[in-house]
Amino acid sequence: MPPPLPLTGITVVSLEQAVAAPFATRQLADLGARVIKVERPGGGDFARRYDTTVHGQASYFVWLNRSKESLTLDLKSERGLEVLEELLARADVFVQNLAPGAATRLGLGAPELQGRHPRLIPCTISGWGTDGPWADRKAYDLLVQCQTGLLQLTGTPDEAVRAGISVADIAGGMYAYSGVLSALFTRATTGRAPTVEVSLFDALAEWVSQPAYYTRYGGAQPPRVGARHATVAPYGAFTAADGKDVMLSVQNEREWAAFCREFLGRAELADDPRFATGSSRVAHREALEAIVSVRFAELGGDEAAALLDRAGVANAGVNSVHDFLAHPVLTERGRWRDIRVPGTDEPVQALLPPAVLSGVTPRMDPVPDAGEHTEAILAELGRDADDIARLRAEGVCG
Image (cartoon, rainbow, N blue to C red):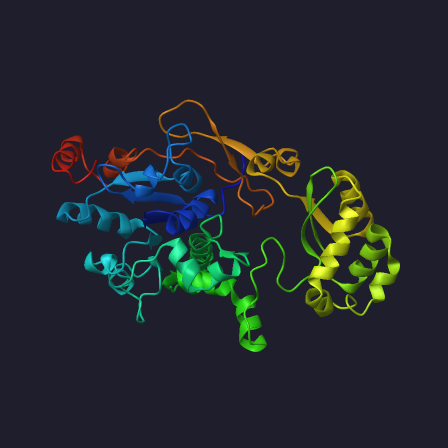
């Protein structure tokens, strides 16, 4: 019999929507926590309707919500709040990323909750923080990318672009997840249940700290350089004679010397004053890239990659998402698992969680339909069939 998962016995109740909070709680579910996702009757989490590409289900929702139980409750009703309060009395963690002020208006702010449930760990995920001048503003991923300067760091000299994934939401979800784990450890070792608060802005602010340091102390922000690196050269994609794009990165002087000798076939360039240091290579990026491009034009993509490998220079082809899906690093390491989604018997492939714990097999249970577990959860709370029928008739639950 396999050992229990690390978070077996932990119950998480989540008023969650979109990306950040569902990402945090899915990772808790991966490790064995029971996650009860409280959704609106009549549709549930609006992320269920972002698209219909995964056998009729939204790609975001399938990614973020496996291994959870779905309970639909109308929290604008007194009876709905009563049911939620009963759940919270039994829970270890409460996660919410509702609109600004919504949790407090429902009596679910962190101080109120801990007054009623001292062992409960409340986790609040906000856009801009629950205090300060922007506490009442809504936040979406792209707005946070704009306000942290990430948009101005991403793209080409002619155009700023958003990151291709929901990077602010993902950052917020990651810090909420690690914050909850830290709070559970604190409660286990000291008996104190700390509250956890994460804002998308603070999370992404941490992630843009390197360009922030560069800007504050260098006087100008790093330029937008497309697939290149603002402070390292050569770093970027070069096109070989057969049309294949190869990304490479030279990180230090040892690699630079080997790159000149083994790849460029011009060992003397290692000591050329234009290129001898990292800063000088960045300053003379155009001249350097012209030399590298000429060499690439003499080689096929595979030949170029082999020479770079021989030089000990990190490199990789520029994949499409289709290429990624078939990547041997995933397939040959057995990183894919089948999961179930609502409305079809056809399985969906999902990636195992990135953190591999020895002796632990992550939970990879189905994605729930909206309200799929409502009746079972209400029965667990002591409601009989007649009471559950009344709650449904009153619209308290779906």
